[in-house]
Image (tube, rainbow, N blue to C red; front, top):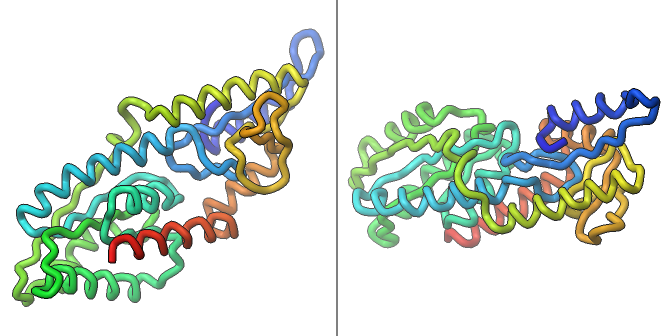
Length: 260
């Protein structure tokens, strides 16, 4: 069964059934989610295709943002995970990222954002555009953020304009990257071999973390008990997973370093 959290819960339920011959069903789950919000596996099928789509959109928007000296708020999907926003922020060379897992109080974060925009558009810096990547899991609507920024720049000499682009479901479509094609092929093959090995109620994923067994078919693939995956996925949803916090911190600090 290929899919996200709902599909994995379905795989667990299905694994309780038997065939008409009385044999236990062998059920293997494969992580497929652009949000990269599935526990234990380090990456899910579709995530980097979505990151690639966002990155390309940012480059296209950068042209018009630079020509008109504007701030662009780019709203991206991700459900309750900020991974898409964070990864595309680093990949596209964005200037600021807003995502729930940052752990920074919103008031403090917006104060830092406004200060950085003013500095980047100052005479000493003379930047021509400012790209904010905002995850849909961030507890502030883009229209409200635009209003806050408009008020902050109302009496500034730089004449800063703010625009919103919501990429929406565009992120979910388009041709898959070669990495996603290879990942899907390897996980698909490993799932078949896992069934042949009589395994059930498991998830095959790209080597991540936690307690797992290495695939007998592919040493780059791990096999996790599905209950462990469900528990970790819930921690990701609540932003309490230490692994996700550490990964988010690493990407966040890298992004800040690159956009100085």
